[in-house]
Image (cartoon, rainbow, N blue to C red):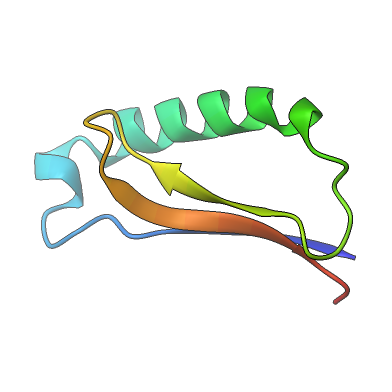
Length: 62
């Protein structure tokens, strides 16, 4: 299995705050993973701090 996370940072990387925003996304979505079985086919949309859809994570069979 493989865990895949894809996050679009826009044209400016959140106006130069990419490290802060990516850190927040990783903390939030990492902490939220225990609500999933984490089996192939599981996935969710990923949102930034302004609740804009910026990507998704998924579990693939490889």
